[in-house]
Length: 181
Image (tube, rainbow, N blue to C red; front, top):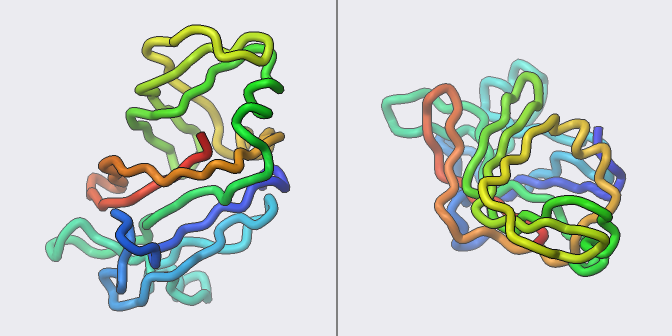
């Protein structure tokens, strides 16, 4: 599914994070849920209905926009665990690429895995050095292909303090995300 360097979790139990839930909108306690471990798919975000249909246990991800809508499986605080590489080591390993420390938003097609993310801050990397700013950079690709090609993961995990939302079937839920800078 992904590079063996990748472990991705969804953690609804984090203190004072935008996506955290003591209990989800179905009464299931928020949980620390391992989705991908060392590149292997290990779990899913489940509400009660999908958990029952798949013969699994709910994971505290049954969320809804408001009382007027039915719950559905949604992310809480989803992120990749830190790796062993320093930001400098990663940058020095890139011959030509883009360093994007901040994103403005994006979307993922959950059926195909295709994604598009706009950057709010990006720089060109040339011969292992950050050179000049790049305006209006948009990253487009396949989530599975991208996850499989990861060769280094940063050791500097930082949770975003911004306003994160997930829109699914036109319904909005608050969330948090993190990335290695």
